[in-house]
Image (tube, rainbow, N blue to C red; front, side):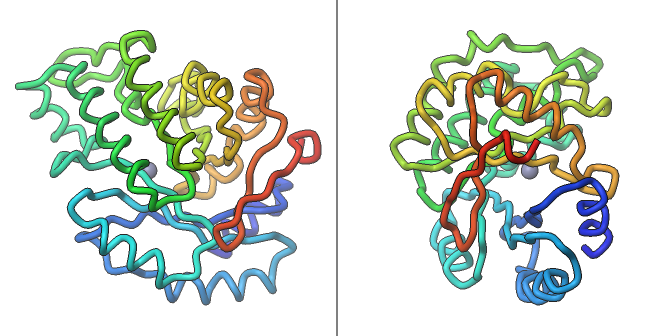
Length: 254
Ligand SMILES: [Zn+2]
């Protein structure tokens, strides 16, 4: 964590959030240690450091999630959807199997239905990488290229998601991982179309993140992300402290 802070300061960032991924049933909550560590790092680095979490949503276990959220002093609780029941949507082998008896449209449909339920649960401050399912675009699955679905083919569901954000006053993360050559989406996450839809529906709570899983991911492509946000009309981004949102002008952080 200290290395990440060092890298963040070097990259000129003024604020970062640690949002480790937490999957109920797979992990013991490691939060106490992390919270203490962040207090130490705050004294060491000229950096605002936020204690966040990315929490996978499980419909049947909402009460447990609620309890964990209530019992930890998070600055930011980000919800995400990686598991459709037992299917890990980012696992190649599992997606391989799934696509043996389903098609890509069904995968998208089920993913967005799950994301919708996660938003409606009202548990989270923001939703992470909302159309992460596009991660597979152009990759080989089952000896076939995973074809890219057009935004129009899931526009209705996207609208349902964005309306749910509006109704629950939940925001979303704009994640720049898609710009990296490894993922090659040439776009952030959500895509420019979904991002524009969020702006048009008046979803103002938007955070910016690079989803750094290692040092070279710290601040990666945030400049491209800011450009994209401005292009669709965002002038501010959102930061969280003790789960309260406030806004910063993009002009001030460029
Ligand atoms: Zn994630």
